[in-house]
Image (cartoon, rainbow, N blue to C red; front, side, top):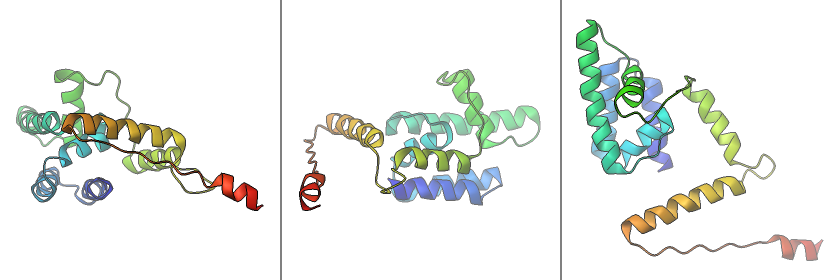
Length: 158
């Protein structure tokens, strides 16, 4: 999933032409499958969706993007169309905050990792565990989790 996220981030950073951006995001979907849609919305809106809902929203947003551009007589930003869609149509966002993605990603990374060890922190572990439990329930799979604490051996050795 991290590789898909990085592909989406690279695409957003690389393509300034909105039509080309949409085309490249759709190419990522063609290559990686339906699981790309939730990643796109997680990156751009921080909204968590399952793949079918995210796919439906993506198609509705592309139509909305085209209609907005046509009505205004100029191309609008895909991000503008997404914001308008989630604020006015889907109503998932009430008070969105506009921030540069690279600043947001840096903040998210800092909130997930322990600065001393470079390992995921407990808060992020619990967040990911919740997501994986939900995924296992949706897909009706079993889930196992094993925790190892090496500190007890290290403390005896010190």
